[in-house]
Amino acid sequence: MARKYIDCRDHPGASKCTVSIAADDDEELLNAAVQHAVTMHGYQDSPQLREQLRQMFKEEHAAAAH
Image (spheres, rainbow, N blue to C red):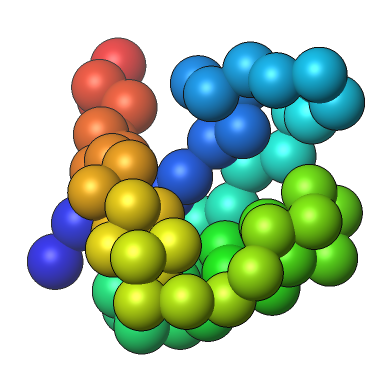
């Protein structure tokens, strides 16, 4: 299973946030991303916010071995 992440730098706004959050489990990542969005960006926790965040998840790619 690939590790997933969400990066605020991919969605720049007025706050110029540089936080990136990663986890092995989608629900763990979603809960951390929601907490960050609510606490740091002033969003309201809602099903719509959760779905938008989930759509922003990306898979990490392992670095190539030398």
